[in-house]
Length: 213
Image (cartoon, rainbow, N blue to C red; front, side, top):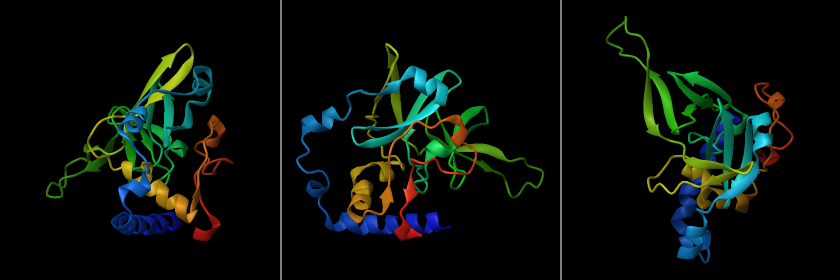
């Protein structure tokens, strides 16, 4: 409940903040060359490491992402859940409707690893015998490209022009607000399997500051 209230509070602040703060302050000196540089590949770690841990976090051109290794494939996405900014790197991977999904540990939102779609179950209320069906909300979480070269893992940020809900928690507007208020702490780490599914936070992760508690 504290997480939900805090997230709503910061969403409200962010909306007001962007009304008065020009883009030049949020991204000072941003040029076309700087913008293009954001989409160069960045080495985030070794293949051997992520195969053991099955996930890792990284900062790619100032954007926080999580990389999963699941069923022999690599997937990268924005690290904060599109719904309320929950820490996806602490969630469990489960299969729903034949699709592998990361389940946000905060509110159990289900996001497909391959496409970033939000999944939900719906039922026809006029048909009491109907069974729930899995449906897609569309792409909600921004997906990034993972490549492997000589044992190194590289992530290239998505250049897709459409707006993703997860952009709110990943772009300069939200991060600038959080940084200016020093309201949250964030670091990157490789998470061992023992940290997942226990309900406890590892030593280095996304946590609200004591000011919010």
